[in-house]
Amino acid sequence: MKITRSSVNTVKGPADWFTGDVYIDAVATSPAPSRVSANLVHFMPGARTHWHRHPLSQTVFVTEGIGLCQRRGGPIKVIRPGDRVLFEANEEHWHGAASNRLMVHLAINESDADHDVVHWLTPVTDEEYVASPTTD
Ligand code: MN
Image (cartoon, rainbow, N blue to C red; front, top):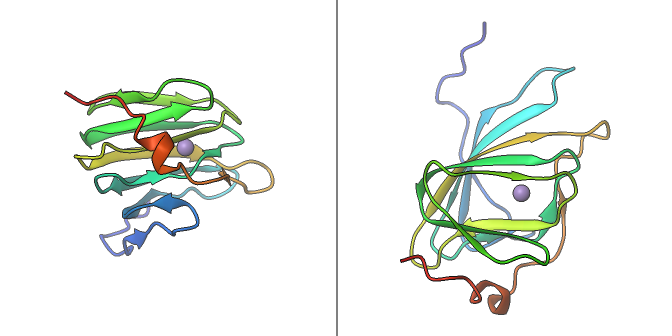
């Protein structure tokens, strides 16, 4: 058994990966051979990931606020607390907060044999983002 007290610093999501203000708390890392990790991610209003894909899929579980997500070629979807989203392996997508609300989700990832968890692509442009549906 290993207890990690609240001693791991919150990390600001780097601008290479995110648009807007995003804060990441490491919830779980696992010793090999496990390759699972979990992060609690706070997206401020309007903040979102860049387009990206996960080699072994990703599950996110919304805990607060109102969020948005989209897979390449699909419509933007509104996600709310209690909603769970599975992004399939190598499915290009993005996720983030609504323009007027923050969004918090737990993200569960598995790294592949090359230790890759995510492959980052281009930013979600304002034009792509403003195509979001209203959240009312
Ligand atoms: Mn993702």
